[in-house]
Amino acid sequence: MGALDRLISTREAICRAATDCGRDPSSVRLICVTKTFPAEAAVPLLEAGHRIFGENRVQEAAAKWPKLREKYPDIELHLIGPLQSNKTREAVELFDVIESVDREKIAKALSEEIAKSGKRPRLFVQVNTGAEPQKAGVLPENADEFLAACRDLYGLRIDGLMCVPPVDQQASPHFALLADIAARNKISELSMGMSSDFELAIQLGATYVRIGSAIMGERDYPAPPSA
Image (cartoon, rainbow, N blue to C red):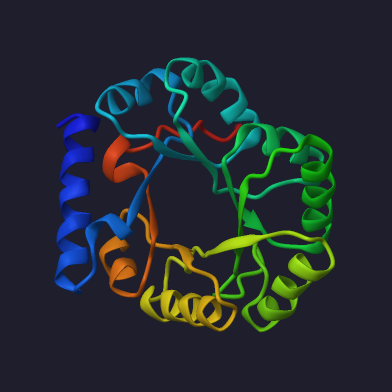
């Protein structure tokens, strides 16, 4: 089964999951995560009409997507990996949605770049729901204060929240926590759920699900250098 067949089956699964919990399937959008895959791997999906894609790294996306946009100008590109402040200008130029706003340094840099460039990508705050030290994201107990700072200090419009639950824990409490933070801060978009748990995320309110390997296949990560 190729990526296009897997895209179709994933769309069907999203539709079933939404319908089963009484939601309109069109309220859940699919981000196809193409990190580590070459540009040509996305072409069959683009030809079939899919337009929402996600990348983890600014540099990889910059090498891949500008040429594809020339042919498919209605692409919606999401940055779903950590953003470094020195990549802010490129990120604002390249991405339609930046999902990994997670600290004041980034909020400040985005505010300055948006004012300078006039481009206004949609912004999501990443919440580290599992308080994992190795993972990006604002801690849940600091989320309300950070969201207020983004809005009031830096003039940013925050459209959504994003999380990546710990791999060794049940995902549902993390999705519920993110939904609670969004509700009390009047935020409508929730990016949560990946290949292994997107149906559960849909039940708990996801408006975007990020699917990589279930569509693109297993990633061939480069081997670490030998000692």
